[in-house]
Image (tube, rainbow, N blue to C red):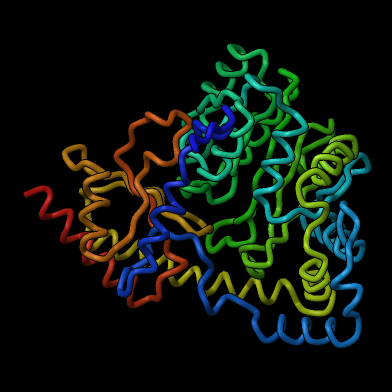
Length: 396
């Protein structure tokens, strides 16, 4: 039979990251392409104890249907933490629990965009979000990323030229893939431009708690006095990605529409996992756990940056991240990034080419994204030596 797929899906290509991750399963492959938390960053014993207690004492509640908005104790715990620690959740806001942060991207696009509407994105940006926006037949307009975040002149030009822009998508903290952090000045300017041009902001902050250097910067959502910011949060990086629990804070009218949209997809986020997260948040020291994770990633980040400096040297350029999971490394002009990735894989190091992260699928980039959280420390050393050797060979 000849299958005829919908216009929305037929033009989508598989995530380059997901495809490359298949190669990481090969024995001996060093995974610089992934974005998985370090194995020692998981609170395994705590989750085991919580899960056992829930299944022993509240099994039916854990295995039963839940409400679409989310498990009430988890919503309360998220709301409390967001208000007290981050000055998020204003009187006009509500919270909904989602199946990972990726679902926030899907619901935001579903409730705000018609086919042909514009989504303004950082360029480069997270491929998972870009593909989500593409799946709704939106038009992506890219804005360059600088060392201190999105180029504001380009952003204003994009807003002027695209009257049907519905929202601006940004990853302000430890950007994926660029690794940069948006300055407070630019966050304020972005908010002012969104307000002036009547568009919303989708602030994606999965890495915000993974700061290992520098000072915390207020979120864009904390500046929101006009109900124009949708904030996306996740437990994937501080607890466990496999539980698929995220959340969004947004104006109540937007949350109401997201709730209807979610009912058409998965009815509600897994009740059992929501209960696990709620218990973890209320009975354990979340901040102490985050400090432990920060110490792990501080060591790994510094190690990889030191190895870039020693093995790749002045041949490459990069912005040293203050947190997150990724380093964006610009290769010399005489080295083709796709060929570099291919040769690295042949030498058992998996990388992601920069071309995977651009709003224009035909976009060109001579960069690669490096992940430091997944490989063991000795593998970071080995892998960087390998790609340093590959770079030298390619340059003659």
